[in-house]
Image (cartoon, rainbow, N blue to C red; front, side, top):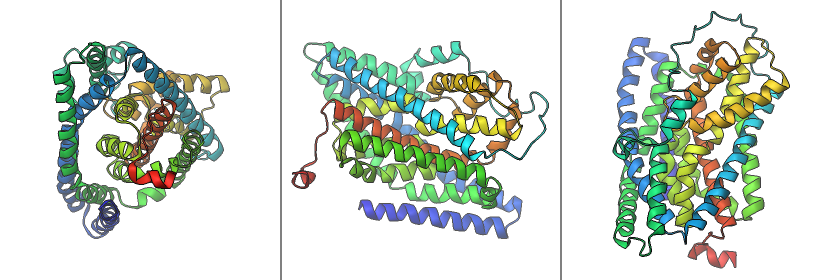
Length: 417
């Protein structure tokens, strides 16, 4: 069934590209836009269904995972290991983006004139990006409001408090624990129903994008897009090598297990869409439920490897386009700045662009450079989203190995023996 579903997804991608190209070639721009708007209805409905699932699923799985920890020290231990991995992975992702953009020089040779200050001021809403708003945004003033708005970071904070409280109780509040486990099981079942419509959503999303922008957009930004995907390939190779070194050869089966969530994230340009499938794939592969349901939701707030790499890559690309030189000290400062600011990506609309815009402003680079990457941002977001899924899956597997919480499935046991 999984193989058949993968065939459906790949077929939907190919058909979406073909239909989008045909519309782009043979329809007028007005007609193409109308068709794209109609196709986007399918994508919007699918993403709404996914967002409908996220809040209760994150809350129930995280509370259940924490509550099953042996004690508060176990929560702190797993949390410390998880955050240690996230920080290390973040620094590596940012550094790879910085190094690769220097090697490839995707923006060199364009030599665009520096535009007027504020030319791109309307491209991204910067009002939400400051220290006060970021810190305040982490903590929910109402869990109902946080769930209504799908504020993942706020839901994670509330879930950690609830799960820790349940774990600290002597009787572990069995009725509450059973309830959240049942909610988790129900939401996973609902997710399986929603996922059956994924091929339709993928077809509609790609068809709409190609119909309006055309395949030529890839050629226009070939060096930038190709360079970024090459950088993602370097990151993927490093992640797979490290997880294989830590976990062992079975790590290769993990990559195979998450191919469908990663493909879904790539096709829809949404990491959220792949969350339920990733959680299920991790548990099926062998990551214990308590670790998977603890690490994965945190990863969606603190471990967006693909998005972080994009921040350094895109920021320095813009600097190259306008022939602005940044010293080594400035680039190190940029890396550390992005290390902190990227942790606020979750829950902020057009998050990567907000972070990039803030970085451009900090280093007094032309914010109008954002307009250069807006045209292909969706295409790049597809790669970022898939990489986020891989990065969080690797993080869960590594933490599970450190905690000795990898449970080899029964069907894999004879082979392992």
